[in-house]
Length: 187
Image (cartoon, rainbow, N blue to C red; front, side, top):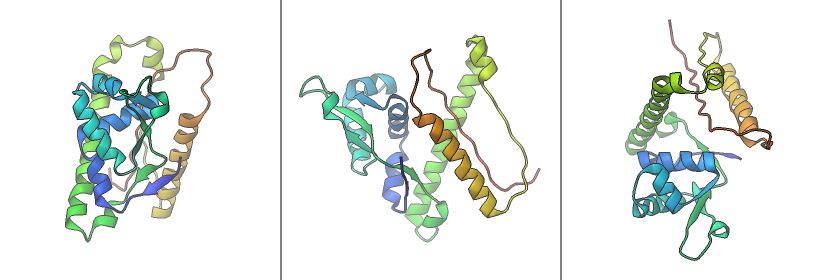
């Protein structure tokens, strides 16, 4: 899946809403889903899902999947063709864009920490194999900006290979959330 470098803050504004962000996450895991399934998974009304799906579709982030519908009343959605990324620096000269980019960053971080906190709170109830397989790691590296960009690219490529691989039918698989942050800092 190609990555689109976003420079229009309106695309970011579309993903700055928590329901739309979670809708994208469900589609990333499920590949495609009906409005009814999305409503159940998100805990919101069908009309709300339809509204948020139209906003995301207006920016090409998701597309309809009519071939999956059982009848004309059922609407299905899947991810669009591109993954998005952005640099907050691209919006430095645009006050509205800067605010939106910051809001998306804060929402992403909040959702990541919520998922981690929920796992930690429930992990002692999880299957021991999942408890042993879950990981947390951090380390200090000495890098140039170019090297950090290369590390980021390699991590993205590694995770993309795992995400797009053909899944064997040998045993059931659960969705696994992976996130990493890398940035200059001092201990």
